Amino acid sequence: MKFQNFLKFSSLLLISTGWAIDITVTAPKIKLNTSSAPLLPSLTATLENNIQSKIDLLADSLETTVNSELSKYGTQKKLAKGFANANMFTSRAGQLSGWHNYKIFSVSGGLLVGAQGPSLDVKNFSNLDKDVRNEGDIYMGGSVGLSVNAGLNTSFLVPGLRLNASFITLPKIKYDYFSFKQTQFGLGASYQLLESKGIPFLATWKGIHVLSGLYYQASKASLTLELDTLSENTSLIDGTSDSSFNILGLNTLTLSTVPSLNLELNTATYTLPLEVSTAVQLLYVLNLGFATGIDLTFGGTEIEIISDNPTTVTGGNNVLTTSTEGQVVVDASTKKQGPSFTRLHFTFSAGLNMGPLKLEAPLTLYPSAGLSIGVRTGVVF
Image (cartoon, rainbow, N blue to C red; front, side, top):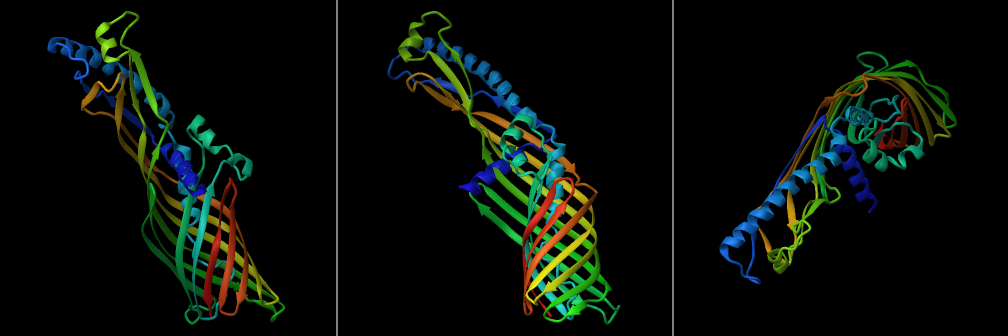
C-alpha cells in the first residue's frame, strides 16, 4: 500500500512538468429511450435536441473546470530540473567508494536511490503532495540507479592508475499502472596520489585517490494516474413544469469525467565527476570512506502527457443512451530541462571487509538539498 501511495505521489509530481497543457472536451451525443413512456416521434426529436443543447453547454463548462484544475501544471521548470538532478545522483551506483586500492581487479554492483528536494529537512517532505496540488511547481525529483562495475589495476601501464567500466540494461519492469526501463554505462579512471599506510589488521589508511570519468544514465518511465472526478450539472426544468421531462424522470443532467493521465518520462544525463577519495580500514573488518568533488552534468528530462478519457452523462431513470461517446483530451509536453551543470558533493561510506567480499552503504550529500543513499557489494583482489 505504501509503495502504491509512493507511485501515486510520484505520478502527481510528474504531471506537474508540462510547459503547456492543451485540454479539449467534446460532448457526447445522446438518444432518448422512451420504451417506458412512449412519446410522439416529433416530440422525442424536440426533447433530444433540447437535451443535447444542454449537454453541449455542460461540455463547455466542464472544459473550463478541467482547465482550471490542471492549468497550474502547465509550466514546470523547477520539477523537471529536479528529476534531471536526481538521475545524475544515481549514475555511479555500482562503484565501490571505499576500495579503490585493489591490487588486481574488482567487480561490484549496487543500488542507489536519489532525491532532490527544496531542502533536506524531513518536515518539508511531509506535505509535498498538498504543496504540489496547491502550487504546481516545486523543485524536487527522484531516481533509482542500478549498475555493475568492473575495475582493473593498470599500474603496469602507469603506476597508480586503475580503469573501470560500469554498465547495465534493465528490461521493462511493470507494476500495476507503472513501468520502468533503464540503461547505464560509463568509463572511469582513478589515480593513487598517496600510498596506503598503517598497521596490518589494526588500522590502515588507504591513501588518496583522484577519480574521473564519464557516465551516461537514461531512464524511461510510464504510468497512469486517475485524478478526482470532475463534473458539471444543469436543470432541464428551468423553473417551470415540463410534463414530458417529468414523465421521463429527467430533471437534472450531469456530465462528468475521471481524468486518467498517461505519462511518459524520459531522462538522460551525462556526468563527468572530478573527485578526491580516501578510506580507513579498522580492525580489518570495518571500512570507512570519504570522498568529495564536483560533478559536471549534461542532458535533461522530457515529459509527455497524453490522455483520452470518456465523459459520462447521467439523468433520469435510464432513459438516456449514448450514441457517440464524449471525450476529454489532455495533451501536454515538457521540452528538455537540464540538470544543474555543477554540483559539489560529499560521500560517506561504511563497509564490511570479509576477505575478497566487500559490503558497503554509501551516503552522498549534495548542497542545495540533494542526496543519494544505497547499498553496494563486490569482490576485490
